[in-house]
Length: 208
Image (cartoon, rainbow, N blue to C red; front, side, top):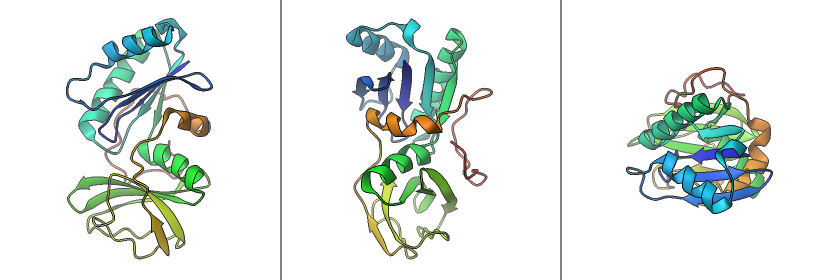
């Protein structure tokens, strides 16, 4: 059974997953959230035990840095204490893979950095094919000019997408627990301590 912590939207989601959702909990109050306490509650509700967890999937951003840092720190600590692998997923992959599969078109994921600044990535075929950073409020993928679904925490009035022939904005800023059925191929154990993704300038095309 896997524990999944999705936090980069600023609204944490805790999921227990074993080929399907065992339990899924969403929270509004980021500041006072104690992941250890909430995990204990979720296990109790589901009638499961800590010993059944065999891996920890954690959202490393980019996104809301405070929420992401807290979840990553908890994942690292729990993984070390229990001897479990930590499996990091960046928010481009989380949103992009789900968005592409759900809306059946490439997914452009936008994450606000500051004011008119955005981290962005294009997901096609279940993987990141292009990524970048915009400090002008304009995002122009070079490898794709068709229609795309846009995910993340930007709104249409915040950013210009002149190179795309069309854009659908479904308000997708976090995914349901069932998205793990699509994300499982992207899971790879970290080789050391996991850290939040804050610099996307060197993001590899196949990075998860």
